[in-house]
Image 1 (tube, helix red, strand yellow):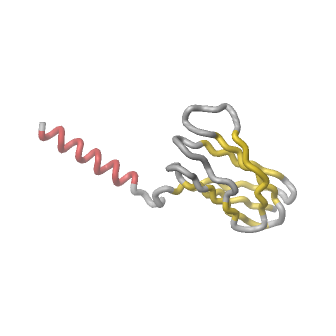
Image 2 (tube, one colour):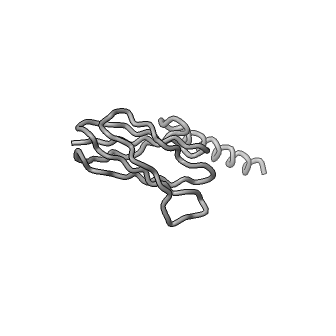
Image 3 (tube, rainbow, N blue to C red):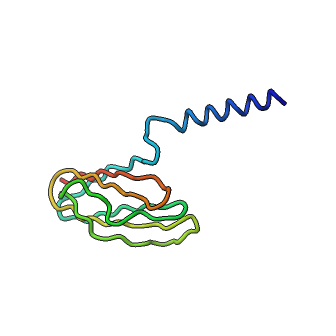
Length: 114
């Protein structure tokens, strides 16, 4: 019995060490997308659990302009799927930060406009 408890303890320690990697808790790195000036692009995010990604997202520069957000199908019990649309306004780089109203992680996407 004691041996089983010791094995479970090591599993929990290993899980804790893996969960505490180099990424800050509550954040997720997204993708790097590219667009040409004048093009529209969209980013689709799926929520797991209650809440939704807040609109408008934070955009780091005027290189990209937020257009709108919509719920998209298929609708699943896990949580809403949202499509955020953007327009590439000028050459450069913008970081878009999506914050969640519940417990889903924050997402950061980079948009390169050429």
